[in-house]
Length: 373
Image 1 (cartoon, one colour):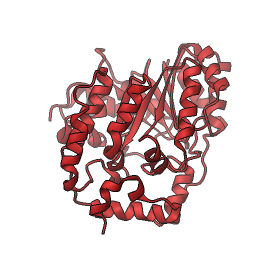
Image 2: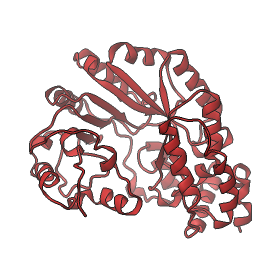
Image 3: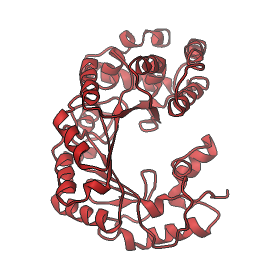
């Protein structure tokens, strides 16, 4: 496979986890276990990755996630990040995006979440989906690592800082780091980005960011409305999300809706689209759930095809912007290509959660009743 167009992530991207480990982008699978914030810019694997993207026709083995997605679906992070026309060389790192996992502290146990939320990991261990040895505990990125990251942002002129969680309005470290960016005099040159579950938004914190950063972009994670939200983003309540959105609107803060698109959210995504348009929310993004695979959006009974076809057909002529239109098209693609293999396994997964949480899948999604034995 010819690898063109060039991927910009090895030259402009960097993602750092709570331990200080680093790589160019989320799907990258490093061969070396010692790549970190202290050696990233001179590490032989990273420099070889840059060379390979410039000179080789095939994608490096570490980029196999993008390669697979391109072959299966015709899309990938690599394709989505190739909008610039620049001449790169090995050793170039400048004016890019740095993603930082500041903490895995969160107040929710969202059903599609696997590993980024400390309480969610604990729950998955309790219901025996994960083993006890997979309990990584509560992790906050340390002060010495934050100091090093501040040096990196300044030295390599990172213009976009994306803070990953956890929940940024819940954990303590995220806003400590935001204050450090402000006090260091870096914030006025930076576009700040993060995603929130909207249950704990504070107006003064939103205003603090607005007043001190070059730009602020925020995604609100919503997988469904009303009882669908309550089931998928447990133990939140829909009213909490509405309150959070009102705070953002009162602060004149623009925001997007980002959906962890699973087989359950697919069943009611048209309702979310309708609600968003009724509330003048224009930008809706999808992020397909591949981990856990058990919640892949196509994992639904084929008998639901006609039902879903009618629901999604009604979305096709809506007057929406290109971002939301692409999300509707992607969701429609999943809805018209169901794969019921593995759905029994998905039901077992949901049943474990219902027994543990006291929830009821079929009360929220009664259309699944004929397929539950």
